[in-house]
Length: 157
Ligand SMILES: [Fe+2]
Ligand SMILES: [Fe+2]
Image 1 (cartoon, rainbow, N blue to C red):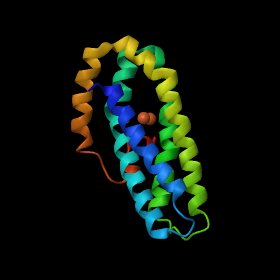
Image 2: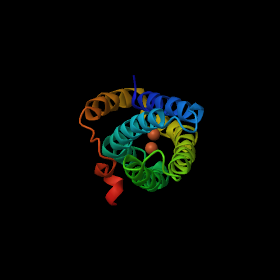
Image 3: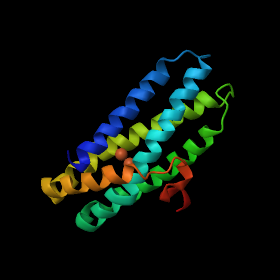
Image 4: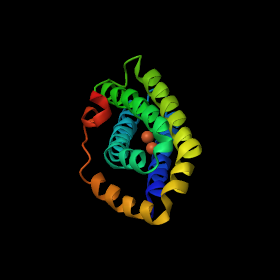
């Protein structure tokens, strides 16, 4: 396991939940609530370990991707605020599906940039051993991740 593989696994987990949401019936309110709660939990933990460990380490050790990291933090900021709104939004509210749709668009765009535009540069700059070390640290931090989206650092930045 290395840090980038670990993050990509999270991305896959979230994409699966998105697909399930897209397949859920319009009035499958209980199912949609459950899926969105899982999406909130996964994305909160994921953005947390990226912001606590992966992003700062990458900025220090692969400064050439700093601009990508800064853009990613801004994207996280929007995502965690949307998560916090969805936490308290009734799935029967007319804005619920629309908010989830825009969340999915934002996250898919973000993941695409991470995986295709700058993770490959990070892999080149940091190498396998360093990424393996980092993955241990991130796996540990995941256990300490908050369940409140606004507790992720970028929410208040
Ligand atoms: Fe991210
Ligand atoms: Fe990510």
